[in-house]
Amino acid sequence: MINYLGTPTLKTERLTLRRLVLNDARSIFDNWLSDERVSDNRISPAHKVVSETKERVANIVNQYSRRDYCYWGIEISETGELIGEIDLYNFDNKTENCEVSYSLGYHWWNLGYGTEALKTVVEFGFSQMNIHKISAAHNTDNPASGKIMSKVGMVQEGTIRHMIRNAKNQYKDCAVYGLLQEDYLKKKIE
Ligand SMILES: CC(C)(COP(=O)(O)OP(=O)(O)OC[C@H]1O[C@@H](n2cnc3c(N)ncnc32)[C@H](O)[C@@H]1OP(=O)(O)O)[C@@H](O)C(=O)NCCC(=O)NCCS
Image (cartoon, rainbow, N blue to C red; front, top):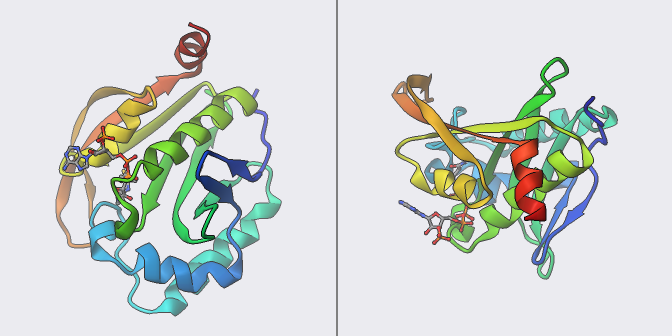
């Protein structure tokens, strides 16, 4: 059974993964959601005005009362800067599987933060929540995302052609990745 724990604060070497609050909307808008370099790799379009972000954050904050809701802001512990987001979603109680997604502001790419955050959330999902399998997909023209999946032990299972149609009306092929709890835990004790 999945052991739902809500969205507790998780610490990594350099990061604090924490619940979002309404006051974060401005940073979220400025740091990643209004930036097409980020949104081009996501399904939803970049936000044009901060009110869109406020609405989205309010929606997230409202769901923190649910135990089966896992949505973290990614903050640099030393500076307090909010640089991105990561979530576990699509929990399926029958299979006990879920998916993970994440985004970081462009300014903080290629500094290892994505790997650090994903590693921590995968560890939380398998060791604390007892998830059976964690999956994710990335556009094939966004290899950095596949790289961080590989770095935390996720394995590419295939490529799905035209899996999504983005905000610019472009179809994208996606590489799908997954990691089983049993493989993760086996590797951990090896
Ligand atoms: C995907 C994303 C979260 C990665 O975060 P990050 O903090 O930059 O990742 P890391 O620094 O931990 O690792 C990135 C790795 O990708 C590699 N990389 C970067 N650009 C690459 C490219 N064009 N081709 C191949 N590898 C690339 C880096 O070299 C690094 O690997 P290394 O540590 O072995 O050198 C970030 O780029 C992002 O938010 N992108 C926009 C939103 C997005 O893509 N979300 C995911 C949707 S599936």
